[in-house]
Length: 135
Image (cartoon, rainbow, N blue to C red; front, side):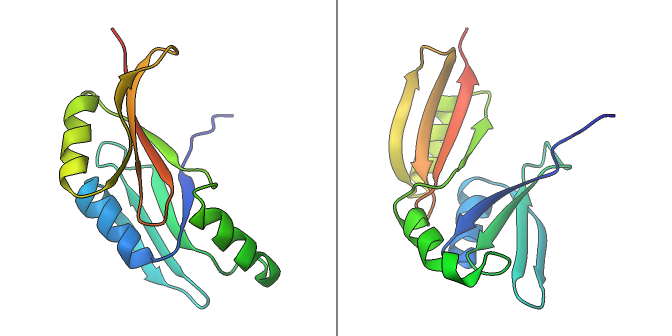
């Protein structure tokens, strides 16, 4: 049996603001933008990985109603999971994303675990990291 990742999800407060960030600032492609009965199914992904979709989901169904406020509070604090993108030039990537006006969390630095990385916040507060192997 072979398993491959197909989807990962990031919760956002505003799907239009998230789309602008992930598409325009990061250069990801829109994969799906469909209105469904109870939600908007919005996914993006890197052009070099056509089989990967990152869902930009607004807090709502299918999350149970009593959990919406809890999730919204965690999102507002930046306490939910983000993603890490690999890049072949983290310093160039950093400068391009910073030029878009994105909020910088960490400028590029060499890490003890073998990468040079940087971090930004998306419009909802999620930490998005970019890394490049050292050496």
